[in-house]
Structures are given as C-alpha cells and as structure tokens.
Image (cartoon, rainbow, N blue to C red; front, side):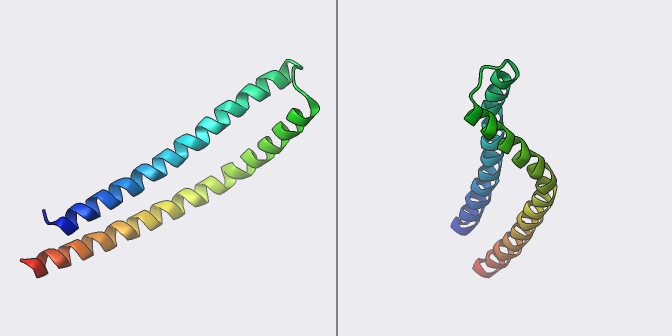
Length: 97
C-alpha cells in the first residue's frame, strides 16, 4: 500500500472510532443521570436536582426522535466519504503505477 492509502485508512478508522466514542460517551452520561433518578424515586433529591432531572427526561424524549434522523444522516455522510475515498485512492493508485 502507498502512503496515501495508509493515510486514508487511518483517517477513516479514526472517524469511525470517533463516532463510536461519542455514542459511548452519551450512554455514559445517561447512566450517571440514572443515579439522580434513583435518588428522586427514593425522595433523597433536592428540588434543583429534580428540576434538572425533568429537563434531562424532556431532552431524552426529544433525543430519541432525533437520533433516528441523525443516525441515517451520519450513515449517509460516512458512505459518501467512503465512496469518495475509494474513488480517490483508486485513481491515485492507477496514476502512481
């Protein structure tokens, strides 16, 4: 493989893992907010924390409806990038040979 092909491979690998990392981070933040929800169920939470929890629930409900659109958009962008990279690398592979 040429240096350009290696660079393209690393770029798309990093982009893929960045998307996975962001998804894991959002899930982790939801898990930490579940701790606040557990305290709220047991009555061990302040009014400010309870208000914050209500806002989180509203945001989460909106997030579910947006996530499907966002996931399809991200998939479309990744597919376009992969196609462009394939065409670009194929072109340069033929030119450099």
